[in-house]
Image 1 (cartoon, rainbow, N blue to C red):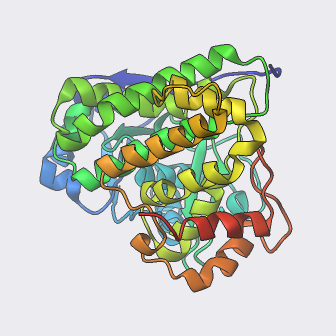
Image 2: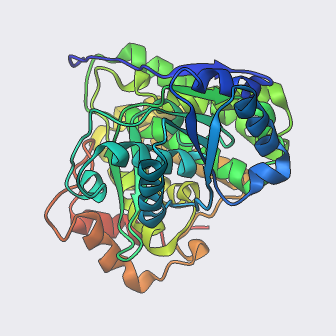
Length: 390
C-alpha cells in the first residue's frame, strides 16, 4: 500500500427536497450568483423555478448562462469567465449533470487565472484558487460533484482534455430530480460510474485489500441495482443508492494508497471529442476490449474480479476461463442496459483507428495507463478489438 494524503472539502447535502436549501447555502459567499445549466431540461422539469425561488428568497442577484452541451465546450467556458468578471459574480451554481459541473469548474478557475484557461487542460497548469461554486446534481455519473476534475473540449481542434481545480464547496444530491431522465442517459451514467471503479480496481499495487473490498462492494451494488434503475428511474430508494455510488466511485476515497489506471478513459476522450459520442457509451465499447487485451498481465486479479464481483463460479483448473467469463459478464450487463458494444454502433469509422490511436498517445509522445502502459500500437489493437463483437 502506498503513502497517501486524502482531503475532500465538499459538503454533501443529500436527500429529498434538498434543492430548496440552495439559497441559504450560497448567501454565505456573497450576493451575486451565476446560474449555469444545459439545454433547458431544468425548466421543463420545474427545477429551475424551485432553484430561482430559493435564490430569490435569500435575496441573491441572479445571472444566467445556459447552453452547456454534452462534452462541454471551451467557448462557453470563456463566455462564462467574461460574464463573471463583468458582473463581479461571487458564486457559481451549476445545475445539471457532469458536463454542466465541469464547465462551471473551468469558469470558476478561469475567473482567478490571468492566462488562457485552456492552459490548465493542455499544459497541466493547476490552480489552487477558484471562484466558489456549488452544484445541484441531476444526472449521477461522473462523480464531478465531489472531486477536483473537469473535462472540456476545445471547439476548433476537438481536443478533449482534463484539468484539476478546487472542489465544489457543496453539492446537493436528490434522486427525485432523476425521476424523468431518459433511459439512455441513465444507462450512460451507470456505465460511467462503473468505469471509474474499474480504473481503480485494476492496479499493480499490492496489499490493498481494504480498498479492493470497498470497490467490489460499490461495483456489486451498481450492477445489482443498475438494471432496475435503468428501467424505472422514478424508484427513489434504488436511485438514491446509485446516486451515492456514483459520487463515492470518483471522490478519490476508493483509490487511496493504490495506483490507478485511466488508459480507457483517455482513449475514450479521443472518441467522444472527435465524434461527440456519449462518454458512457464510449466506455461500454472500450472497457471489455481493454480487459481482453490486458488480462494476462495479472490473471489472478481478473479471476478475483470475476468471482467476487461478477459472481462467476471459479474453474480452479482453468483460471483463464474464469477471467474471460468475468469479462463476458460485464458485456452481458451492458447488454441489459442496451449500450453499444462496437465502434460501428457508435458511428465511428474504422478507417480512423490509426488516427485515434495516435491522438491517444499525443503522436507517440506518451503512453497511457499504469496497469499496463499502452503505446500507440497497443491502443490500435484495443480499437480493432472494439470493431468486432455483438
